[in-house]
Length: 221
Image 1 (cartoon, rainbow, N blue to C red):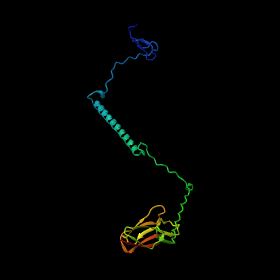
Image 2: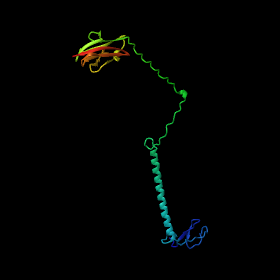
Image 3: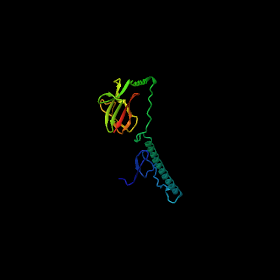
Image 4: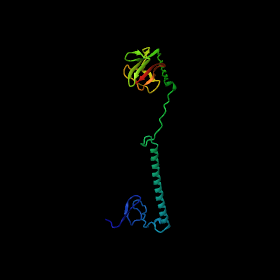
């Protein structure tokens, strides 16, 4: 092992003694290593103007980065809130108008209007009578006591006319009470009841489709 240090040629890579000034292989001059220490940068020395300027620049860079980060966060919040506002279903999806389907007029079927039903003709009443139900005889003048009741009905020709539209009423109120009778086959039937005595009597009327008949009812004690 040699006690004399060796250097390596920076051109051919051969090793030779440090005492030589050139490489014995390629003749390249040996370059001695510099022992100079690089000077310090003024900006790293405390108390200098360059150091103060570097600190100011660093603070401004940090402030600018902070402002930029805040601006990006605000922009993201605005975008998210706008998306929720424009959402059609509240799930962040932006609603879009439904496209209108164009249908040519020739393809639309023509709907005929429904025919207007013909009005039902009013039945023609030939005659109408008031009869006592118990004996089916025509009555023009009857007499009853106060509190007495009697069932009467109308007889109409032609007999095919429905009697559900018969109207009963008294010429003077307070003497006779008229109560319609309900039930199958009881159309046009009423119960007459004497309420107050009247010597002159009170007319009770039955009317059907414009044709009217009257019966005088006398009420006594």
